[in-house]
Image (cartoon, rainbow, N blue to C red; front, side, top):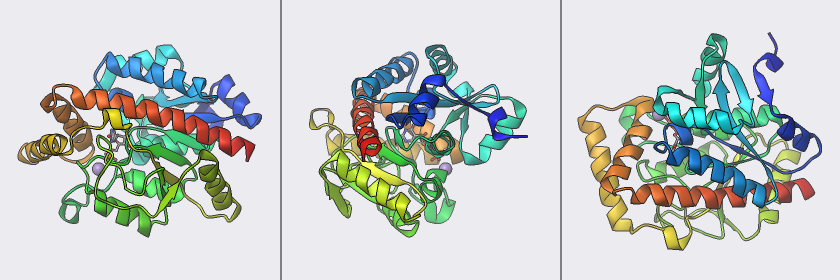
Length: 306
Ligand code: PSU
Ligand code: MN
């Protein structure tokens, strides 16, 4: 068995990688588990368009019928969006089983990083990364995304992480694992729906070329692993801190009461928060993903010319 039996890279993406042109990887769990149909498909296609408008080739990643697809086409994105949570959420541990069984899977941040690296893609844009869950000192629920960031050399552009997680512990974990966290024009870790979280980050960089330079140096020095670029949601879409915190607290309590665990927690919380905010969280979510797609394309372009 060889990798090429399991990895299908679209011609456009393969060609761009070969010619050192900017490419941005995109995940599919955000489509299947992060947003409802049909907004999920509409958003995924808009994200691809935004990446293109900003000078890069989009590469939506998913596991389809036992293949890691890098550069999914519109029909595949529609399929993922319609099937939604019927498709398995696929993190690192799920990948070999789904591939061996010829099944479908939605790539999380971890799996998208793995696939991006296999395809030679350096930049990946998404909404939020997984992290250390609240109460992890008892549940040990720590996303495999953090381990992947420690090992896999891809730059992940996100709007921080949601306060469904313990943001402080997530930052501690990233520090332990040697993952640089860079604030794009901010010194504060953004909390997904809000610009602020109350947690400082060590490095603020002002330009995409500065970020590309960090990526290049990291690679030159054989410092394995990824980079987190935290890009705050645009002010005009940032939600009221008290309002969103109230909804998150309520959703977290419900998850506890209903005994929701493991990989089901994040999708459960996302859906409940959307209901509790009457769809306002979804609008914020969509806009921050667009914002990250544009920044990801600019970083990828900076990397290619550096
Ligand atoms: N956070 C979000 N939206 C998401 C996810 C996280 O705000 O859709 C998804 C991403 O795919 C992420 C995954 O990689 O959930 C993390 O899940 P877990 O905590 O089970 O590793
Ligand atoms: Mn988990």
